[in-house]
Structure formats: C-alpha cells, structure tokens
Image (tube, rainbow, N blue to C red):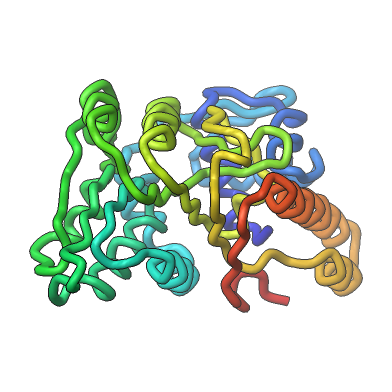
Length: 299
C-alpha cells in the first residue's frame, strides 16, 4: 500500500474510534507496529493526531480540511478508470442507487457521460443518489432520471445519512446498488469509518437486486470501525490492480537500510493482507474486476 494511502486510512481509523492502540492499528491495516509508529509520528507533525503511550488520539480539524474536497483530488486518474469500469456494468433503462464517496462521484460523472445525452429506447436511466456531490454531476442530463434521497448532509462529506435517508430507502427497490467502501478484510468483511454511513449502506444492500462495490486497492486487507456486511453481500468488486508479493519483495530488496527495511516489511504485510482478502472475495462468490493501474503501486 502506498504511504499516502496508508496515512489516510490510519487517520480515518483514529478519527472513527477517537483513540486506538498501536496493536489495533497494526491489525486493522495489516502492517507492523513499527510502520504504525512512523505513520503516527508524521500525522502528529501535521497536527492531525496526538501520540499517547501505546497509541494515538484524534484531534479536531475543520471538516473542509479532511473531507470530500481534499480526497477527491487524490489519485484522480485511478478513480476515473474505476468509474469507467463500473459504468460499463450498467445497462440502459435500469434503476441504480449510487452511494456517497469520492470514487462514486467519479462514477456519477461516468454515468452522465455514458447515458446522459439522451434517453435510450428502454427509457432513461434512473439514478438515486446518497450524495450531494453525485447529484451535481448527474443533474440536467436528458438521459438520466435523477432522484435525490432525503437525509442529513454529513459535514465535509455531503453524504446523506440519518433517519430520513433510511426511511426513503425503505420505500424503494433498485436493480443495482453501487457501493463505495472504506475497507474490506477477509475476516471482517466490508466496513466503514463512520457509523451513520455504515447504517445507510446496510439499508441500501437490502433494497438492491445486485450490489457492485467500487474501491481502489488501498482498501484491501484493511479493517475499519463499523462493519457493514460480510464479503458475500456483494456480487461484483471493481478495484485497481493490487501489488503482488513478488513486487513487494523486490521493493524490500531495493529499499536498503534499517528504516527502508522496516517500511518494506510493513508494505509486504499489507500486500499479504490484500492478497488474502482478494482470495476470500473470490471464495465468497464475488466477481472481482480489476483495472490496469500502473500509478497505484509504483516500483
């Protein structure tokens, strides 16, 4: 897992729990405690967490410094590829529920490009959104019937959560739910960093005939705060290409030095967890679709 992705996941885990130990973070991220210590030191230098004995606690930061607008700029080419692959799975005239998140906002743009120009002979594509960000990308498209579900807009993310969102979902049924996810792990299954987001995803899963999960490979082998569902709840998983154990070993050889070896050990552990999770997904009957993504794990 690239260091920027690991730092982001570490920060989101600490914020989701308020306080986590080194051992808990190492387990959830699939890396060594030495790697966790180094990452927490970097986050503390940036004023994002505070190191305490054996772990770290979260610090309050403005939502606009850690929310959607910041993350939307990360790996934009990767998200565009994932979005295009996901849009290819959608047929004309159907009903789609689109989850909140930066990657699913990219999926909204891909759906607009694919279906927005004019209705197909089967009729317009109906898309219900759980995000104000996705709504903007799908608005005023002749070939798309846009439904904005009710709910409270979560600060920084602009995802729609709470009782109104849950009630709206209970009244509808969709052909496909396109779900974003914060983490996926061979034991824990699909999980999220925020309790409200996790509750909405669980409700959405019950209202769809098919679920397509889309997330980049940095989410593989990671355990977030709130469990959403077992691996078998998804039908298709669209992700970027994960590094192979051979690539991780090559990186370790090239790193050299004690600190380099520590970094590579953490990356190798994360790679093993990612590979185990991919194998568990396939064993659970999930169709895994990967995109060719050379930027995701540079050599």
